[in-house]
Amino acid sequence: AQSVTQPDIHITVSEGASLELRCNYSYGATPYLFWYVQSPGQGLQLLLKYFSGDTLVQGIKGFEAEFKRSQSSFNLRKPSVHWSDAAEYFCAVENGGSQGNLIFGKGTKLSVKP
Amino acid sequence: EAGVTQSPTHLIKTRGQQATLRCSPISGHTSVYWYQQALGLGLQFLLWYDEGEERNRGNFPPRFSGRQFPNYSSELNVNALELEDSALYLCASSLGLAGGDTQYFGPGTRLTVL
Image 1 (cartoon, rainbow over the protein chains, first blue to last red):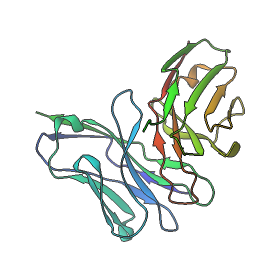
Image 2: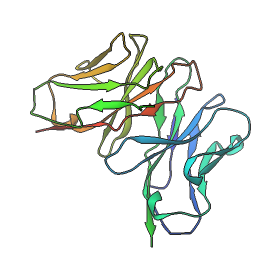
Image 3: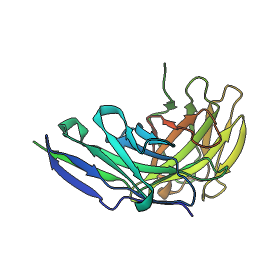
Image 4: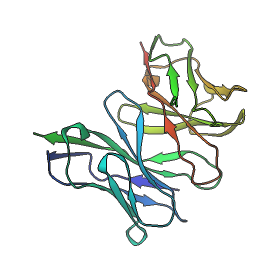
C-alpha cells in the first residue's frame, strides 16, 4: 500500500535561514506528489506538485521541491524563511489506480524564530 | 474565481445527533473529496464523489455518508455522532482527471461533539 512519511514532527528555524522539510513515499509506479501548507484552523493550500518531467519543481511563496526516485523522496526547500511561513506542512501522494484520494504524511510543524 | 467553500464554519452537536456539512466546489470541477482531520490522527480520506456517483470511500463506518448534487456541490452526513467524530472536516474539489489530478481544499468545518 502507498504511504508517505514525514520524519520530522516539528522544526524550528531562524528567520532568514534556509529550510528543508523531508518527505519519503512508498509507491510502486511513478507517483504524483504534492506539498500543501496549513495555517492554524485553516484549510490546505497547495504549494507545488510533481507529475512528471523536470524533477525540480517550483511552487508558490518561494518554495521548491526535488523529486528523487532513487531515494523515494520529495523534499521541500526554501532558501530564506519568513516569519509568515510558520505553519504545518503536509506531503501527499495520489493513491494509485482509480482510488482518487490523496494519502498524506503526518505533517511537519514549522516554527520560525525572530 | 471563487475557491472551494464549506458551511457551516463551526458545528456543535451532542452524542447521538446527526450532522450535515456542505461543500461547493470550484466552478468547472466535477469531483469532490471529503477528509477528516482529527487530533493525533492526521488527514484521513472519507469519500470521493464524481459526476454524482460515489467513487471511493475510506475506512470509515457506514454512518458517514454523503451525496453529490447535479450542480456538483456535496453534502457529508454523519449519523449517530460519537465524541471521536470531533474533527476538522475538509472538502476538496478537482477536475476529476484520471491520474495527476490536483485537489484544492476549502477552509473546513470544525465539528465538535459534546
